[in-house]
Length: 175
Image (tube, rainbow, N blue to C red; front, side, top):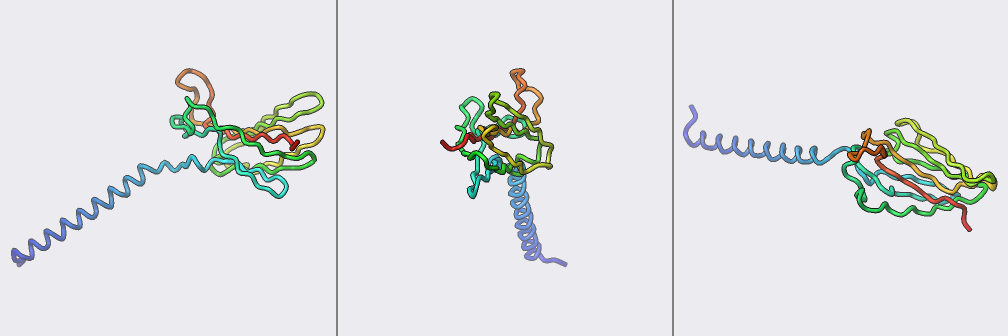
């Protein structure tokens, strides 16, 4: 038989154990609820030009539902960085895993003797991380733009800009 002192000690130990479990469960719940599995800062491209590696951050990047964006949609995008690619050279463009894990599109802008040429190159999820880009005197690479798909079919205002993010670089050759 358990005496009253032992009952009191068991009750205190049980209360402390229950409180500990509640605190741990609440902490895990807060961490899980706060982790969407997505980090906005993980979206970037890298351009390897000669012996240099340039990291380019998004002009704008949003969550997959385009609800939260950096910078916000009602503010201007970040400026496009300059990453000159010399004529007669090849640059390697690599996208981060955050970009590559969903469909994305590469748009390249070239100057040719016939005028400007824009080329689209859609990429499927988890298939392409790196693309070689050549700049020649008869086909000068002026810029690259990466757009990443969102889960939105149309915006609340009825428009169909369904990109969740945009990463761009001005790649015109050095002057």
